[in-house]
Amino acid sequence: MKITLPSSDVIEAIKEAKKDCMAVKGFFLTYDVKFNELSIDVEPKEGYDFDPTDVFQLAWYVKEYV
Image (tube, rainbow, N blue to C red; front, side):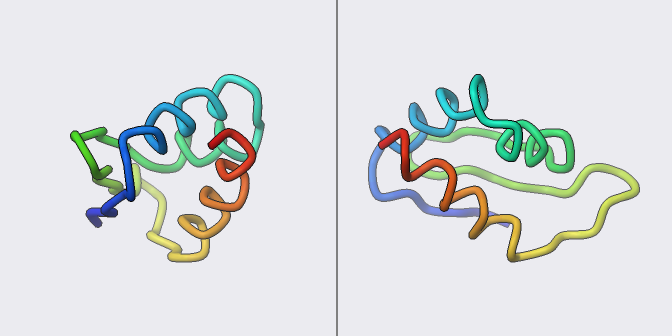
């Protein structure tokens, strides 16, 4: 799934949140994430299913870092 982001600042916020927030770390344990210029590609890792609510939860935690 490709997620378009409003700015490159959001990518930096995701990377920063990954250092501090366990919920964001858990997202990266469950999904393969590839950063592009203004988007991210998210694919579930083997043995996991895609859950759209995970993306909303990621946004919820990352908003504190923007």
